[in-house]
Length: 191
Image 1 (tube, rainbow, N blue to C red):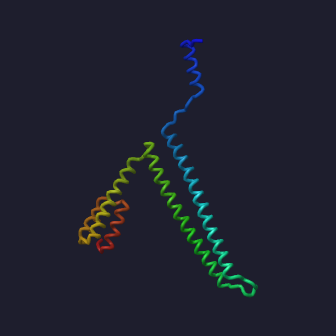
Image 2 (spheres, rainbow, N blue to C red; image 1 turned 90 degrees about the horizontal axis):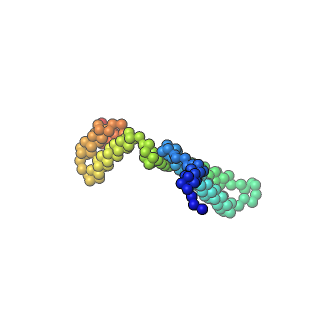
Image 3 (cartoon, helix red, strand yellow; image 1 turned 30 degrees about the vertical axis):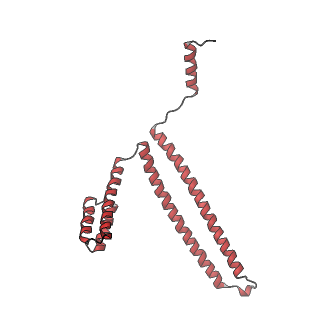
């Protein structure tokens, strides 16, 4: 059986109709990538939280068991209330430490989300050029602060550092580095 051109065209059109691939716009593609990364972050956070809770509960249960073995209570009249206070204070300390770790983890996750959002915008081409300029300005200003600190480490006269800090404030007044320069000037006794 030989195929004619009409038959081939008909087969190709039929295959096209069956496999209609939808082309994604860059915005749709960026959204899908963002959602996939978000799901991954959420999974990692959930696993990390579960591990931390498991470790904490294990540590607390081991501590309680060790305390029970070390101070067995035989009679209700011999209850050691000071030991309970110590246990309660240690539990409170552990809770406070766990809360601190949770806050730190939240901050780290927020920082990673900000980083990944910026990276995603750059990758897809949706990055705001003004954000790029601001980031580069901050890098230059911080580099100047770093240079001033190197002068301090080399035990150079503070006047050289003061000049650099003032330049940072004058050239980059609305940056975090300018705020840092103001703090350094205040610590040097110059305002």
